Image (cartoon, rainbow, N blue to C red; front, side):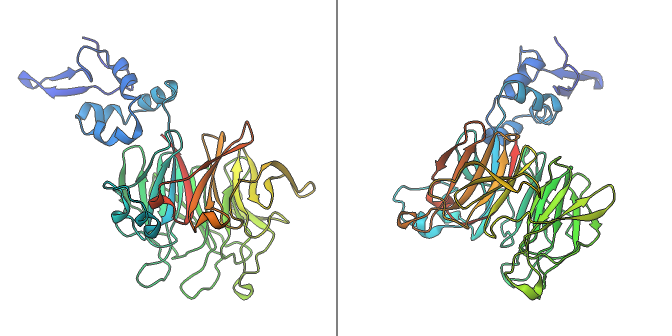
Length: 383
């Protein structure tokens, strides 16, 4: 009988005389081949797969399992959407729904779009009450849902919930040091940064902090040079530095600035960037180290202070201006944009647009009506 190779977890049981005896992951098949088989199971079935036995649960948690999925070209790109429910549109559908149908659609919660398979679902393990306007960001397979408003008092909260997308398990994370909403939020260098936003008195903030989801700990950062309410967050070119774009001060409600600040982790200091902001309603995203914005008549790329913006692709067809949120998936192979459908045919519904970076072409994805509500924040995870 072949033993498990290093990094692959087989099963064991306590045999006669108290000796541990090996059990094949799949009877009669070497464990490395069994892991290759398990790696091809669709992500939607991973929870059931892990529940079959301890051996399968252990094997699915190893680096060898992740490597096998990548080698088998079985990886799946998941986009997590912090989304308002759309019960009125769902009620128009005559087709009956299952457990994930409109009867269970929350006022604000976590929806999942599988870019690889085209499937939509609710994350049924998510907290039953998610703070309104909570934001999300991901480090590896860990997704953090942060801040937002208490749905009863409408005051900002410091709540943090963390999902391990590989296992489907949620846990309560260490709270932010400051309650905030409408803040910049993004992953950079393996940490999730938050900066700016506003407090319960609607005062714009310039405080910032960084979260390590593995250690479940927050690092208080120096203040930014300016208050920045409703600012955008993203990683910088190398992917290891956090950028807070635009926002406005308390005294200038709605007066969005056209500059940005990025955090230098080595110097533990903020640096300013001038004239970065595209139109105030633009959606920003970093694609292969470049800052892109989706607004106006095209997809634009920031070339630096001297060269400004250049066009890199067409505007998403049918996207209503000023409603977009964007996230990069597949290591920069695609960009997913969510926003409202323009024109009379939109009916207030939202859709997704998937941009192929290589071909510079868009695919419009019209979700089932219970997933057609407004999306406030998006993040992507590769499984």
